[in-house]
Amino acid sequence: MAEKPIFGNWLSIEKINSLDKYILVTMEEPWKIIEPKITHKPIFLKFNNNMAIDHLKTLALNFEYHLLENCSLIGIGGGTTCDAAKFLAWYLRDKFGLNIDLILIPSIISVDAFLCSSIAVRINNKVKYIGESHPKDIFIDYDLIQIAPPFLNRARVSDTISITTALGDWKLAKDETNENLNQNLFNRARNIAVNLMEARSEIKDVTEKGIKALVDGFYNEVVLCEEWGNARPEEGSEHFLAYCLESFSQEHYIHSNLIGMNILISLFLQEEYAEFSIDEIKQFFEDIKINITP
Ligand SMILES: [Zn+2]
Image (tube, rainbow, N blue to C red; front, side, top):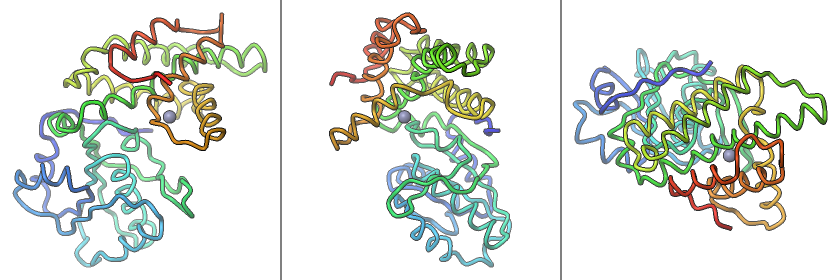
């Protein structure tokens, strides 16, 4: 089960200053913000955006293990940083029996890597999920997140609002292939989408309430999919259409924009099965300023 995030102001600094010893995995941008505010430096500081497994193993092998007793490992950054921190904590435990507390502090709400226990790495340049790493704490630091460009923070909402098409797909699958539809999970998923739409102006401005709404949306979605066993309640045809377009055109697109456009196409194709109207979702994308035009 996903760890419930803790919300607050400058939690990253408060946490770091309360620790004796810690390893910090981060990127240059968040480090520039954090460094002047902390009282003591990490015993190891790693900037990393390379998710190749061999590179990560080399990073893990470079630590001086006798220093790692009662040490915490903090990941502060985006998805790549969180996955790197999850990998290192897992690898150090798995290979060397080191019990290291993992603390994840996203500096941007762009992916849900900080909530998922599976670890995404690259093996032969393909994304593979290996191992599981459960953070002891996840902190959502409003002040840190608000420093990142607002459009990066709100873009990922497409990947939660894809619930609006996933639900129509689910009803279709029930009628056409007799798939199980759990009405309770269906309603909970629907509520996640409705709550996000109600928070649209806060999300657009990336206020504290907007950040909370985005993270709650991710969290509830991750919990729901864990309960159900796959992503049926939250994604479907809009993603398949995206993979299809990318495969035909051999192009890469900005994920949130492409998924946004595809949600509208899927809602159109679902006809009477569509759980939400095209107009209300289109309005939502306009209100939070996600560009969904082809
Ligand atoms: Zn996606």
